[in-house]
Length: 249
Image 1 (cartoon, rainbow, N blue to C red):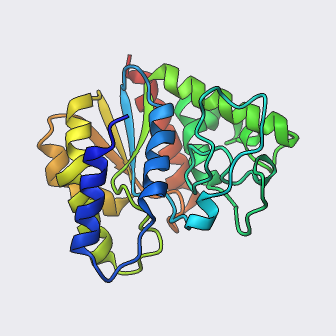
Image 2: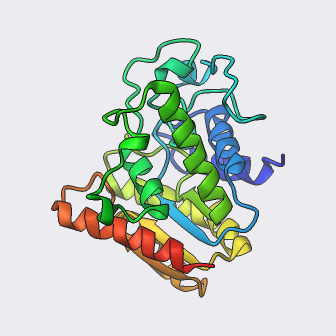
């Protein structure tokens, strides 16, 4: 797999932000590998989020346990990224990781892309720890969901190739998103030419509005699932994911 463009973008980010702390390139590359693993043959809808969660090198060094029901050729290093099944599932790892909650909000987004959750009173129990499933059943449900998203042409892409969730200054996050678009993400999206892009988060939408308009690809945006908004706003977002993903054929 050619990582040259990814590495070039990563080096530019480091050069332009010498005072900031970022994931190592090993982490960035593994996030890329997980994303590529779940990339559909034909991408119809891109979910464009902000970034994965910053991952320390000693966490990245932790590997999955040998596990018969994980997909063949699945990356084995841990990263704090929703496409990494072990994020939020410590029982899959060879070593316990403190503070490994995962991002259940993004699993809800994935689930709502394929399921009309409004009809089921916004029930996400098959893929959440609050549901009735034991660990292995829940993980299998997650894998089945990811396979279904892949089959349907739905793919998660991040606006930043490095984890920027810990960066408190909005101006810095915006700068990194712009750098990533100009040096990697923009070319990626233009080469794929999806039918629709759903931007997750107002910050990403604000930063990339002009660039996205320039692609001639239809796009919309929703608030981050963690945004402090009334439940009705998030429920409307679930409806939007389902509507868009089921209208793209």
